[in-house]
Length: 132
Image (cartoon, rainbow, N blue to C red; front, top):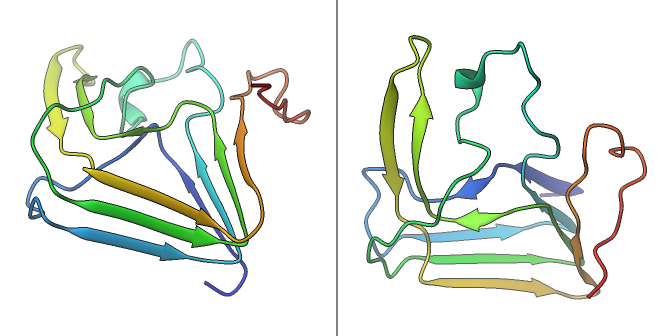
């Protein structure tokens, strides 16, 4: 990418038909891997989210690799690689979902690698930083 790559998802995983030895390579001057920033709003349809807010990591075997390189990398909020959860449907039924993650995740930054706290609906503008 020429400038930045910003990905928003609670879970980064392989599609159902992907081989277990898949490789994902991302490169940009700036990279953001972000979880869902705010909780689902009451009164809104929960099934519009492609991945549930509280996903669990998958235990399926994989040898897949996820490689990301940038001058600056931000990882914000709850980010998982792989997903095992139930998705609510419009009729309140649940559909089981499990997608393999990655055996090897490499984040390579030429500068900073920052881990930022997720933000609630009332603090998105402030961008709170997680202190270790």
